[in-house]
Length: 274
Image 1 (cartoon, rainbow, N blue to C red):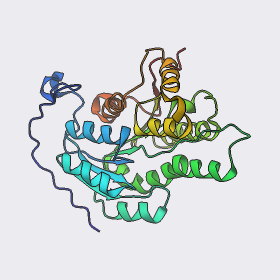
Image 2: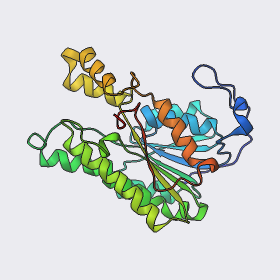
Image 3: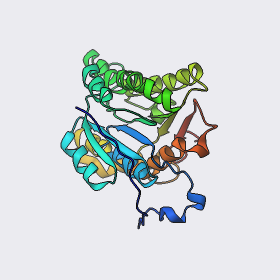
Image 4: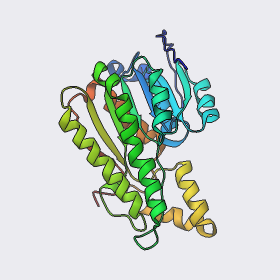
């Protein structure tokens, strides 16, 4: 497999609805023209919104996902985007993808899963699985991407969670995994402070298929009641949107954010402030 990335002229973008036209942004702020970005778990939720936002900023996208048809469908909608199948927990799968990438400027480690359970109700197998998907994968993908990112003086954005900063009821393994992502972010920034930038975004509860799956699995008989409880823990009074998170990813990857490194940035509607 050989991934071919060819710089192309970007058409003017006129985005309606939630987004303003890129032309209306002052001085074309937060542009990523001709940057090559890879997003794991890029076919849905925060990952898909991030792919769309980075494309709007002028980047070329590699949409990496275990669900190749979904990644291909998204890539077909976007200019200068390709889809690749990647199992982020498998070093061979990760290595195969990166062996075919000639250059990389931006890595977004977004792939992850959740788990409900306290210390008594979390099995060893479930704990190992969530750590492998949420933590080991960040290690594997970042390590494989590192030579390319060093060469480009690139940027890494890890998608963490407020669960890495505060305790969340019935989320033992999930909290542990997201705390580890924060720690890895800070540690890499300390080792490579001038060679690249790495930051972690810590979202609150975001309206994604991830959350809908949780409601369907654990609260099918009381979905709206639990949804209201999820909304209530964000003082701003709503769930986050994937676009909220994607906008922060774009900013962190831009030259305007060059002084931000090794940071964990909450984007949680005031949850951790309260």
